[in-house]
Length: 248
Image (cartoon, rainbow, N blue to C red; front, side):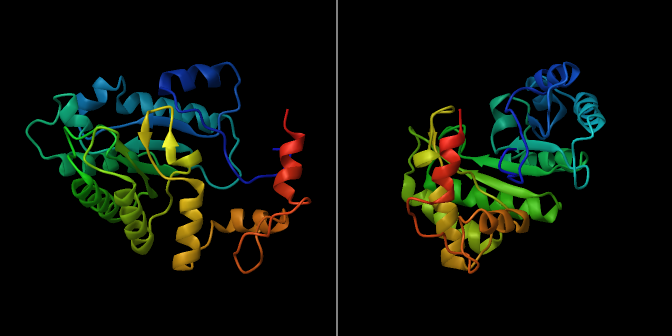
């Protein structure tokens, strides 16, 4: 907030914890929850549609939004219903698409599939992860949700960072809305391999893409990005280094 970064705060916790935080006056901008494509699978997550509606209404009551009322953040992923034995004999992709229908009902700001997150028991290798990622992207776009992807794989899957780079590039060409940026592409919270901040930079530079307009304006105003979209050259007076010096 001190640097006017156009962003929102969000804690990846169960929606009931977010509700308690709101009740105690916490400044919640986005409400996070993992969702799935069947009532039984969502029950395994400890949620139902009424609970999601309650959380959305609670967040709206805070009045923190400056543009619109899109304040839900949903994560999904092929295999979640199957892993909970809540797929009712339906294939993983159909169950995943049903999760996007759940998300759409709550006018979310962000929806992303965490493709490959469960492991090879559900998506065996890099080829299956690539296929699933593109399936998810297509279905998300078809259903009109703000679709992104955490391009990832577990360490016991038959996949490597080359597969991540392949899917990353395919997503960029296909018009993905966002990817994940974690230091070194190593998600230490969930113990899998993902994408880094530099991967987003690679996509922008290679495919001629731009950040969201609000971020592009802020990056230029802060002296971090040049008007042509290139990162500013590093130096002693680089604004990012000055920002770092103010953090406590």
